[in-house]
Length: 222
Ligand SMILES: CC(C)(COP(=O)(O)OP(=O)(O)OC[C@H]1O[C@@H](n2cnc3c(N)ncnc32)[C@H](O)[C@@H]1OP(=O)(O)O)[C@@H](O)C(=O)NCCC(=O)NCCS
Image (cartoon, rainbow, N blue to C red; front, side, top):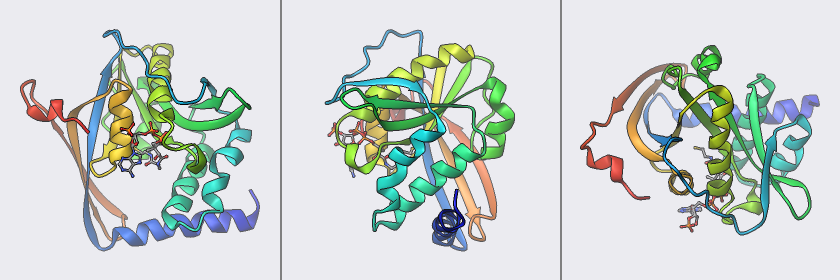
């Protein structure tokens, strides 16, 4: 990455820190898909297939956000680039079958990745048969085509490869597009993650509120 691009990413991520302010609370749903329950993956509005992420995919995936005027979009791109640079193992992309362009990315972790997951902060320690799907991203020009739900449903099934029979994912309670995408991909809420951030994100306190079996929030529709 060129020094200019590195500076652009640092600036975008610092802006995110500043937005957190002196004290804030972030609430995320933890959603779960049980892989032993048969589930028909939804189809996207374009033909897609899934394959592992390679570094060359990051340009086409994140380029539109980099040149967008929207600061939040620039930050989404910077966060994923930083995440990929940290060597987070199993990234998957969906590819637009019509032209081979990568059109969705998401990372899968198993219990063996717990030390990396712990470093990401804000996630429970994965149990031996659990996997985690994180950092979903659809490029601006591919949004609204049902790609997230179709791709996430397929990538979740790759959790088999890490020996998991259930998959978790976490989404902020106000990210309706992502919550809808997760639910269409077979995920339903099982907990809330409360994260108190202080001093522009430099301090944090995380707690997980697991829903009882009869908790109506398990049946929330987004
Ligand atoms: C969240 C995201 C991955 C969804 O990608 P996508 O491929 O466009 O998702 P889908 O096309 O499957 O759309 C999901 C649903 O959300 C809806 N949706 C899209 N934007 C929305 C918005 N701003 N408000 C409410 N619903 C919205 C879509 O209409 C669709 O529902 P519908 O089928 O009932 O119309 C994409 O918006 C994104 O990359 N956002 C930035 C990064 C992010 O938030 N990642 C998730 C982190 S948990």
